[in-house]
Image 1 (cartoon, rainbow, N blue to C red):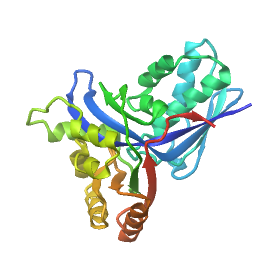
Image 2: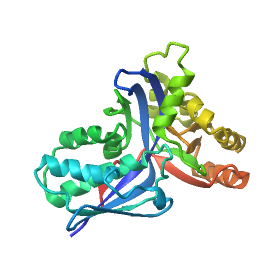
Image 3: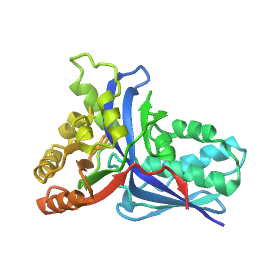
Image 4: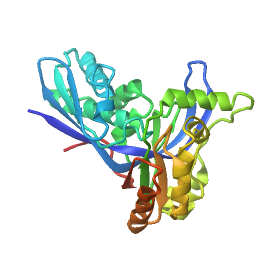
Amino acid sequence: MSVTVRVPAKVNVQLAVGAARADGFHDLANVFLAVGLYDEVTVTPADGLRVTCDGPDAALVPLDRTNLAARAAIALAERYGRTPDVHLHIAKDIPVAGGMAGGSADGAGALLACDALWGTGASRDELLEICAELGSDVPFSLVGGAALGTGRGEKLTALETGGAFHWVFAMADRGLSTPAVFREFDRLTADRDVPEPVACEALLDALAAGDADALAATVSNDLQPAALSLFPELSGTLAAGRAAGALATLVSGSGPTTAFLVRDAGSAREVAGALRASGTCRAVRTAAGPVPGATLV
């Protein structure tokens, strides 16, 4: 018997970042939107814990117990007094180290799959609690849709959306470390007061109305200057997307994937084609959101 769970990528339409806390984390106002790029995690009984992966950039995915999918299986097994004797196979389609929560998606997918395989019957709140222990983005990967994340991003409030939003994503030719981007954010903001992060009301209204133009006017990412400082070439990708007619351009999360909000599927194809021709990125994908979170298939 095996269980497969499909989990979406995310884009941050707002990422407001507060000053570093005593524990090294930052308070966030993180507006997540789940988009239709997916990893699939398949869990099969085995003699021990094993992780395999295929798909784009699979060679970059750790296959030991540091993998979030492995950590999720271990966490659930420990809570229910069993051994995590499973083979976790990740069919990877979300960019690796790309700021789209691919590792977090794998953690949420493995957690839901192991819960179904073992019949633990964990409640939604219990699964979300384990997700929060695994990482700040993992709870959203479980629930999907659109949500405001506060605290480290793990405290979620579901948000209304009035329709689909269309995106183009440009993948860079190397990754960016999320901790490194936050360290650069701290360096860049060391000489000024960093305000408390709050969600933008106009952005939340734009999501609820399904208004792409209004959303384009309000998207923001406080980590973007840090990402561009560490990876200046991303500026060329952002400029190419603007020139191609994107409504809004931004670095997705901690990067280095860049995100381009467009009006509809036709516009997405046009902007994607222009980005491919620009020579400023390694690969280009289109997707729309919101979509559901981790789902048994």
